[in-house]
Amino acid sequence: MKNVTTLSDQIIKSVEELDEERVIKLANKALKSGMDPLFLLNLINEGVKRVGKLYEERKYFIADLIMAGLIFKEVLELEEIKAQFQRKDGEIKGKVVVGTVKGDLHDIGKEIFKGLMEVNGFEVIDLGVDVPEDAFVKSVIKHKPDIVGLSGVLTTAVESMKDVVEALKRARLRDSVKIIVGGSYITEELCEYIGADSFANDASEGVKICSEFIKSECGG
Image (tube, rainbow, N blue to C red; front, side):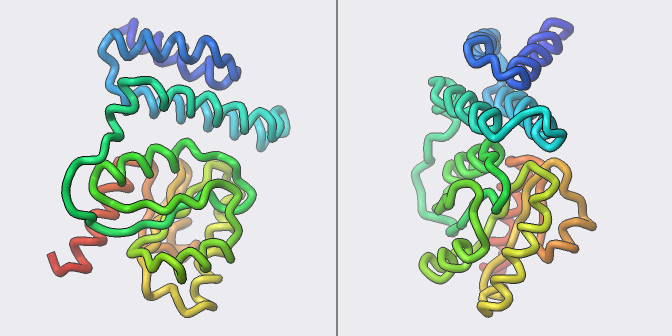
């Protein structure tokens, strides 16, 4: 167990230090030793959250945030990881519009959430990162989703999330969708402040909540 903890710490630290080559080497080592791919992604995500904190403290720059995202995407391309995101056969449960809100360039949590949602039978429209509120409104009008997912790693994303909800209200679209917000720092109080229906601190939890949304709509 000590070795697993040490390897986990090394992975997180390597992401935090933006050591791309070492992250991939350690990720491959972890997967070969039997580490669960989703657990590995959570470790990568923890490292990226640390990069985000350093950015908020003005010790890192936007280029560093982008680099962290590129490292994550390289990990996503590893065969054992890709296998986790193979869509299962079956009908589409529901449609979801997701995006990282304005002012935030992080997409790791969103990408994990998107992959798991697709595996679990959802159609996902991904708007990307640094998405302004009007883009969410236009996407809801165009795609008519069941759910809107708002993601953000930086604590400043809370106000941007609230702006999206308010924009949907002004467009008289708020009641047509369920809204879930995601971020490790999100609490019940922040969720209520934003005006969302629910929140999740990790991607797996988010998938369960969205599945419950659909069941409720169908009267299940």
